[in-house]
Length: 344
Picture 1 (cartoon, rainbow, N blue to C red):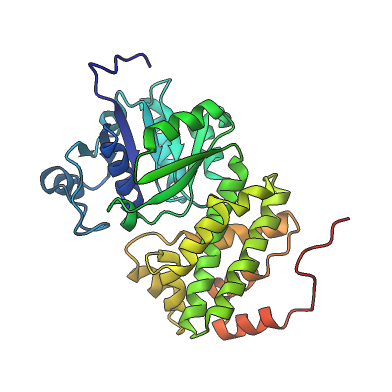
Picture 2: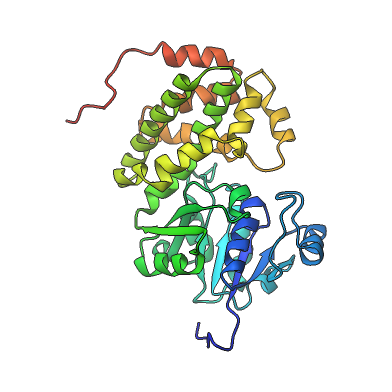
């Protein structure tokens, strides 16, 4: 898209107006973009435009006045040099399909959703590439340790953007980076997406561990062995193992598995006392991606013949009626093995 930066306002679109989408819209707005924040909810759009608040998802935080909410997808994407997809994994294909006719050819497409499509087991960049009819190399993934509640308050945050195209990753980096929001680039799309998805499962387990009253020993072991599961699945899917030692891997795992900001941690904590899953999900304002991802990862572990014991036990708790205490006993009673899998 040709534009005269000295006379035209840079435009970006963010789809949709949940907590993370709103926080990222704020980052772009601070960086000088006129941001169209798309939502299906007319009352939410009115509140954002008149009160500069998104009280349902990020209460008590004022939004920049260059964020304009709209329920019109064509209006949101008109003239956008960057389209940031932040729909839940279960809605990503539907949102992308609806957006496709309104995207301009040179609009950079970025997603910040951590999960797999449950029925196809596809990563979000693959879903976007299919529905937008664009090469997967043109899609950028944003991930890393980043609670929306802290980003909206401009607390220091560091993330990673990944693409097969260095130019695309750097374009996203330039659009998002500022003094409070540091952005690194990476070319390992598979690793960044696998890490972002599976860490939500481990965060569920961390919340469950805390809810059961276990201590730091248990949670540190859970996070460490959870990282091993991320690495095993990522390796067979073609990821670079070094990615899991970075922001998208251990960084995001620590943030999500140890913070009460994490909806996955909160869901796990509530499950610990035997509260049924459907009741837990009813109490959560936002989507708990770790639940969908547990189903998908359980299938991926079978598809790739990868051992993922934490995922297996959480699947049994979520969907097979196993008690959390029984799941812990199953993990602790596994046959002895090496910490680092032998090579060859």
